Length: 432
Image (tube, helix red, strand yellow):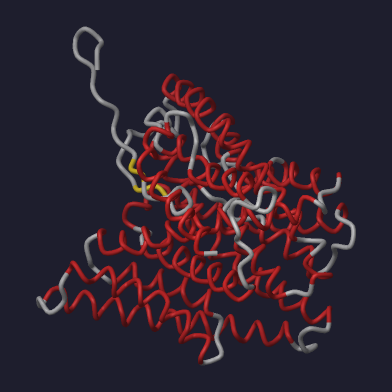
């Protein structure tokens, strides 16, 4: 096991050395580490990642907590104001439609999946991960407004659907007999307590940090470590008082982000820490979860995975954007770039840990298959479709043709943050 751990650390360092170079080959960190896990995992025995269930659960939970907190905390309402209406459409209309359509098709298509299990599949595969389309997100040809819209949607939809995933898992546990018959009602109470508690923690912590920074009591160099601890504190203390820790972390991030008044580099430390854990999650996904799921891939699972990336995603997006003023090409572009990634994997790992094998077997393979197809499909199409759409948008300069601007990309799964830069200007000879 020590040798495998050393090999993982070596792989992380090697990726650090060549990550910028790999971007030229359209290879993102998720794709690289999923492939590495498949090649070196259970099939070859090079990587021994037969981790105890409790270790896998802790890894998944901590990663999800940091991702939920930072995605919410770095949301800037001021920067979001120009796209607020579009974001509300995608998250308030498109996301519920996506969950509902995914639930209905899961009940109709997947054997042994109905009721709570269908809701779990629909909710677990609804959140998107912009990091899987990192090359598109750093392509200055794509209007900044559209990149920002996809980025914000990706940063918030996982936190919004987490209560549904938790509720569905509780219902599935009750149906299996591994939890009491009132598990769903208990889960609802936990969600409410977690949301209220997270709001209090986030507001109080944000006010304290802003006050101590202004008075010179807090050192900015150590503030990032404090915020890292705060995210986990919101989770663990919510559990201690009977609340849901994931919802508490997400709501605490939202509240903290509106009040902390600290430089952005304070959150950068938490983002980079989550980035490290997310890479390990991708590696575990390729080395452990995928090989086990392969044996349960059926034609129904594959068909549902394809539908999840196309109809289940794109139809709700199109319906939610009716009357928004965006042209058809932009609507299709936003609809396609809804990769399934880190959040779905973590929800899958949580299902494996919280459900009996008989309960996890019908739902986990479809999550694994969808994420795998998304890594391949969005990784291969990100650069060419972005360039093609960017050129078309530049010609039309319609509602989506806003001027480029710098914005941080949700890069948890990509192994770090990327920043979209304004394109370099050309001289009189047309050279850059």
